[in-house]
Length: 166
Image (cartoon, rainbow, N blue to C red; front, side, top):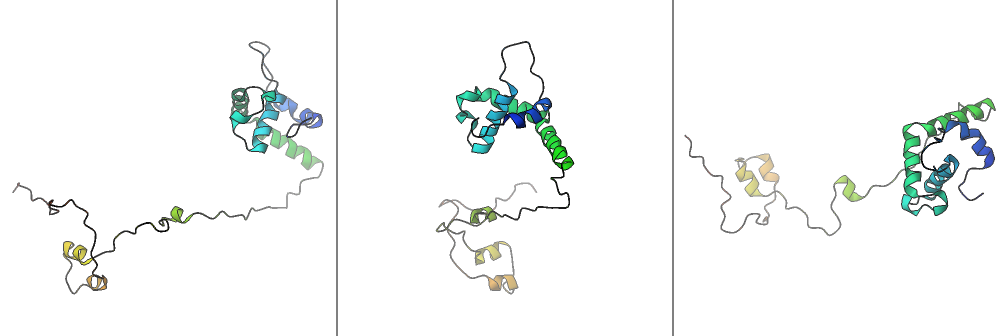
């Protein structure tokens, strides 16, 4: 038996839970071989295309994996094994395990820019004037006067065009 493969004892427990292989049509990969291929992928973390040839074409193993997932074969296996372990007294239903691991997100995930990247221009007085804010406005008094980069092309007016309708 190779690494990541199901033993004979394990296979005897779960074999009845797999769908029967149709006797007609082209030769199919045995369910145990397909399951060993799926387990090899899941345990090694490799892409499907890197599946060793001893398990058959990766497309076939991938097809088996998807069909078993759709027909809930893996759920039936888990349920049957849990029932067996519970009957033998190996499951403590009063025990709760909570995963407390965390993964730190990058600064960019929270909307922050990269280090050294140019910052957006600050709010300037022309914004207050464009918004018709009074000079005594509290907001206007808190804004620092700083030049902002020109955003329109030279020679182009940024004033709103007046409509000719009256």
